Image (tube, rainbow, N blue to C red; front, side):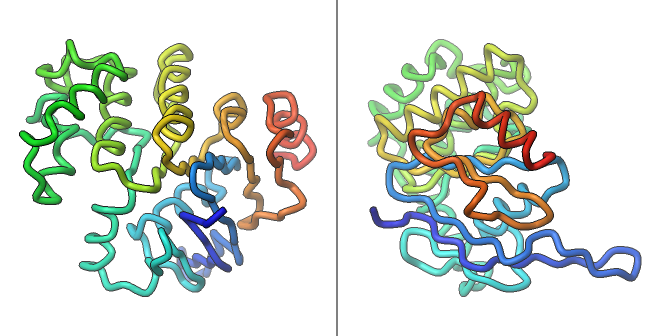
Length: 247
């Protein structure tokens, strides 16, 4: 399969207290078309840095990131932002919705930024919101929505422009179990039914078990020998590998 995302020898170093700290050390991974890949690691292991660099939100110290065949790390800030608008949907742990906009206005925001006429896409947006059980709540403001509804709006916003790649940063981290399961089902559906590719970082083994493959980030590195591949991914196997790695 062609890789929608290809990360090659990624390095991220920052300075703190006069010392250099290596967050990511020669990290490489790929996500194929219509594939769901999870990355697990402890808090502070570099998972979010990996996702932010992949999205072009944070510069890499070294290495390359290719999204849909184009090198994100070679672009200037303006070009990265343009590429992000068309090629990447991002699901944040803390939702990052605009409080002054309604649920449907938040969902349609990427279309407006991309200079699409939302009126021409009304039927598709309605189908998306109905699929996510949000249509009845479409005119509500974020402060009127539950945590699960807020994250479903965030997922819908990531999907609405039909990008090939979805990046999800601890998408259930602030949700109760049932709401978290609903969000994970939506991400799984985005791959199986929507044809998207998903890279998710999480510390939740049950969320990771929804993926096709699970990678493990430890001491700034992802060792291919640690990977759980297709047919190996289930919650007990994820838990066993976490215990084995001391994560």
